[in-house]
Image 1 (cartoon, rainbow, N blue to C red):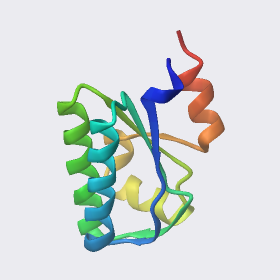
Image 2 (tube, rainbow, N blue to C red):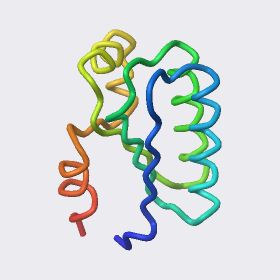
Image 3 (cartoon, helix red, strand yellow):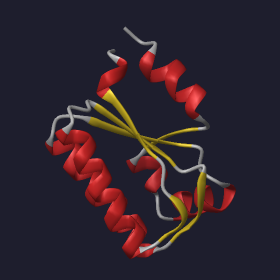
Length: 109
């Protein structure tokens, strides 16, 4: 995997409708720049509301339509609970941190 084909998006704070729209734009720009894999690093996200979750699902559809892949890493305990309650942990492939993502995704042939 060429590292240039991996783009990382790192939102911060509350992932609400406004911030989620920016994340969707950022992901679209990554795809336009040739990304084959988008990693959404949520290390600095404190909470995601329903519009934020909707935007993540929408972004995933955009990524899949571009024949690319999207992964998530570094979610807080609060976001992890939200993902489990809404079954988003089944929709998204979530890694504990960026290192686990790199080991499992980037180092595979």
